[in-house]
Image 1: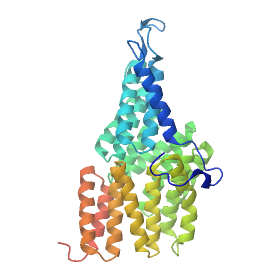
Image 2: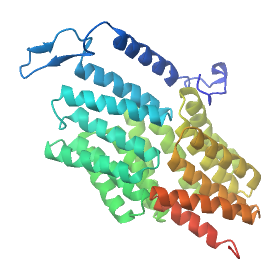
Image 3: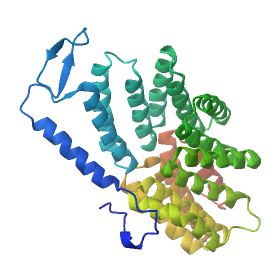
Image 4: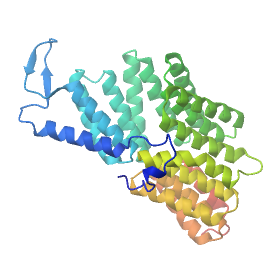
Length: 367
């Protein structure tokens, strides 16, 4: 059982019990181990130029089937925050896709390139992530695959967003959303309207941010993407927190977060749980409860550190520095914020770098 899943299943509200990713991981590992240990010269059938002429007939699976297995194995690891495992599995899947599609221009190879970019993004390697997404955009555009190109362009927009190039990020998000709308890709729509809403919130464009987060929730509901629905609801709570007068009450915030937290713990999504802890902490800080806010900041920091999610680690450090400053522990706040600044510079994470530097300017006599 995932180390974050602490609530017994029998206590979960009806409708929230969903298959746990750990069980899926175990079955995938078992299947791949069987394939690896099979007495054969090859793990997959190797096809030469003709559709029916085989170089080897003693493989277990076709190359595209094996690539699919590794890709799904990688996706489950990625969702659970096991980023090093996810990267290794996505890399194997990409290599096998190169065999199955006879080169690096097939749709599955491009998807593997985007998956690698997502892992690098979570690990805080923004420049490497940008390389993968630019490569995916270039190849997908060259082979006339507008849907894949639109998704890659949206993720490239996210890199620009986090790197501080907000105008370029908005342009890329808008292009991506427009193309995904044409093909009815509700998952992509939910993801990129949520990210664009966060960008609008950052730039104090609150009507546009509300419109986008409503569209993100609607797309997740239409496509039945339960994970994205909870991510969008958490983002909506953060937006409401930033605009509500008076500040959101503790009861309201707990009600909004409850189902998302149950879902995160049941399925095993530490990224979602870290996001929930951060937003709940911000709401607590708005209410003046600095002790509870500090507890939640430390919880988010602990989850990010445990799973190697360095982007969230940087954001959690900045928030903890802010909470510590508001508690009057100024020297401790300075130390935390300087650590966050150093980490953000290493990552080229301009969004959090700007926040940390603003917090430092609010502390008098910083040496």
